[in-house]
Length: 231
Image (tube, rainbow, N blue to C red; front, side, top):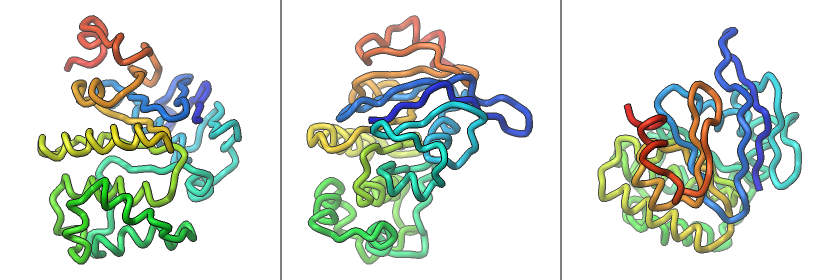
């Protein structure tokens, strides 16, 4: 569904990504792992078009996205939940959700009911401003908002960061439900190993801007963890 090939990205003359290549198959959840500062977030930004690639190819369902702006890539079917969530704090939960529908020219068609079933806590707070939600509730709102764009691929950047354990469990359960529905693929950037093991199908590990290991999550062994993930 999503493939990136030989992506190179530089910031101010410093090479950040070095030939990153990975694939996200249909109806799968792929974990992109690694320590802080190795290029995981930049990889997601290169996919959605928020950074300019020096070279390389990004394809969605076989279509080259290289010439498209971020909003055009989103309309083609890429949903993006950035690190830090980036909800609109002065808008209500319902207004945050409605913006996704309006911007994408989508009708509800039961989609709002679907995301509220996935994240029932949001149903209780539809008229509450986003900035008054807890970090975990904001994360659920950010994912729900992205799902309302009806993406083919959902990019999630560290959804467990700063989130209380019970909400992490709820997000894990929700991702498993989405996987079971089989309607989209997910690329998850994450450092929390147990979370990846609970939801992922396969993994890629990054170090110094390059992919250094990959395979089914069942192949994530102690040697790989100690070498590339332990701080």
